Length: 367
Image (cartoon, rainbow, N blue to C red; front, side, top):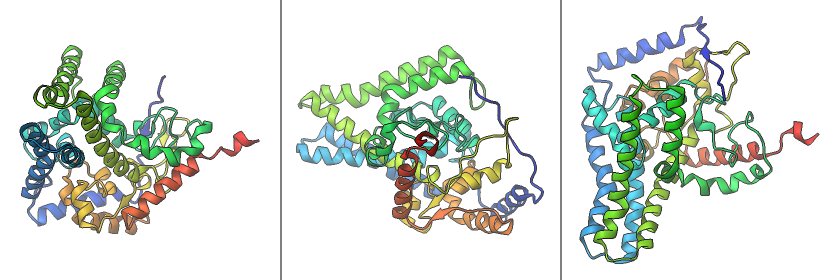
């Protein structure tokens, strides 16, 4: 399918982004701090990797009752989501450190989460961050035919039940990375010659995908089968539970930022130009939640501060709470929206209300 070339309006007579960028730069300069991570991020990295990997090594080395092993796979899933949101995410945005090799190292943690760096950077950094909530361009809005996230998507009869069954599908996010998604995405992106930076050598890119998948299966499935004296299906069950826990957490956090009634979903004009500048588009299509909750701030890697993240993706999430005050005040000054829910509970409720709305048969089809 050919995709329309898009461009954002360059008309911002009030100079919102220029003003905001100047103020955020002044914040870092005046406080003499780097825009990347610091000791807080390093400490969080140790904690998240410990939650993810420590139970795995304990299961392999100790004689642990089955029900405890089951609980450990849930903890591993929580740690897996934590690594993804706090370590991999900052690394692949280049915001973890001012040293590129450290960013590459931390970004490469996606390989032990079942993903692929090239695919993730194209899908997330290029398509999602550039074309946020634009149907046909932001793949985060695409869920095949099983879910309908926007009024621009085709309605099907089963969508009227999606606010019930969607939560069951959300947990499959990362296990789909491991099994199908990476192969499909790489085929699609290589064909379209998409990349974040220099376009990779196709042979090397495909080789990395194949090798990383073999190593992944070896670590998480083959090795436990060789070491543990338990039935093979129990190992596969533990693997599934770990992934399902992580996938559920990641999916819900991602959806609360953009798949909401408050998050606008504009289409371009006939000439392919969006009516707003890129920065203003981000304000209109993105929603924050629970930004005053320290636990949510800490665990989600600042992904509850999506407004700040989308406008400043190269700033580490550990700074979002501070710069959010600048973003909010500047948006208000320029009479622009700053969308947020005060709690995670209210945001989740709003998301499923929106799914119910998108699942209703459009009036045009009722005639």
